[in-house]
Amino acid sequence: MSNKSYQENEARIPDIFEGIQVNNCKNPKCEKFGVEPLIYKNLYNSQAGSKRDPNYAISGLAKGVPGLKCKACNEITPIKSNYSIEEEKQRLSAYLIASPLSCPNESCINHNLSIIEAPDSYYKFGQTSGNQRYQCKVCRKTFSSGNKRRSQKRSEVNKSLYKALMNKLPVKRCCEFLEISPQTYYRKVDWLYEQALGFVRERERKLLRSFEMKRLYLSTDRQVHTSNWTKRDDKRNTELLALGTADNISGYVFGWHFNFDPRVSPLQIESETIELGDYDRPAPFRKHARLWLERDFESAQRGPNNTIQAQGSIQADIAAKYQSEVSRLNTEAVEEIDNTVKPPSNGMLVHSEYTMYGHFQLLNELFANTEKCAFT
Ligand SMILES: [Zn+2]
Ligand SMILES: [Zn+2]
Image (cartoon, rainbow, N blue to C red; front, side):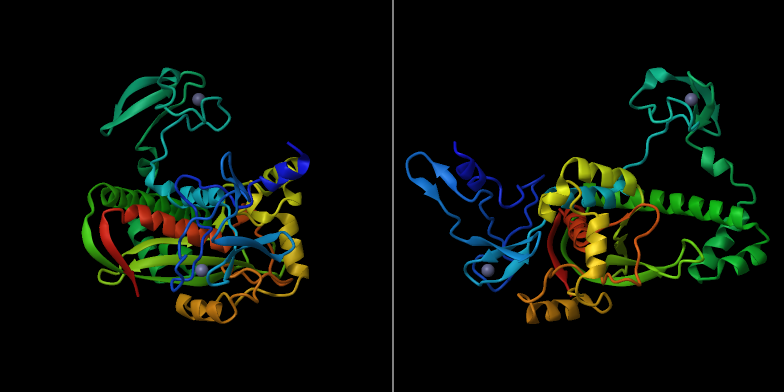
């Protein structure tokens, strides 16, 4: 096979991943709405020769930003990585999986080996307040599932702290009012966070198993959160976008998702990107397509501001989107990156459209047994 024909048969659109293929016509009025594209430029068939995709063509939106052009309605949508969407969905749904117990000693080699994966690395060590207690065979540290709860002294403070948080009491005032140190404050906030995750996990796992509904009426909205949690001398803010969907009747919110992944290390992601030669590939073909890589950020800061305002409702954005569909660089992105905004110092910003896709993929799973979901 010559080099040319090999290239012609390289994937032009990211392949379907875990049942996800978002690269299709998104115009609900078009007959090709949701029709899957051909992954390869030419589909070779020994009898009929090559066959071109009758529905879509590739149309570059900008350097390194390939678009998918629908041949029926001529709309162009930016091509996305299905793999990265699944990855983002995994991140957003991580709360549904309880983290298994392992040795709490961070310098111990068993720290990353859970009692489920490696039961032979631990001894059973009696019970404490009804919880099974374990001992690490390496460092001899003992622990149980109830550790965090019991270490809470003055637990009456938790309820007051929770109320204070809900009423947006500033940190300093809160510490004065409850007579606790800032250190205790942050430890308790972390503890409350763990409890909240546990609560949501219990509820929504039931939802996954047995929730059946004929119809759900939902509303999706998003907000911009501006944060300046990093260095005092750096006046630039970090902007995070949050996306949530609520049930209109009960007000229950299914996720409030930020386009920020606190678990990844920018250093590690950057070096992997360079090693894989991913900066030379169009964005949707990179391993870390969902993350704001250093060079993306720099070029976004330099380049013209082609993205729409982050503020405002989804409906307004959709209206705006259809007005300037073809002229805009990236129709689904909402971040505004200029030199007053900087990337967070820990973790990495996620391209907001990936968080949006991940959010809806998760909802799709939660409402698997719902006959019809109406977004109002
Ligand atoms: Zn179309
Ligand atoms: Zn240990």
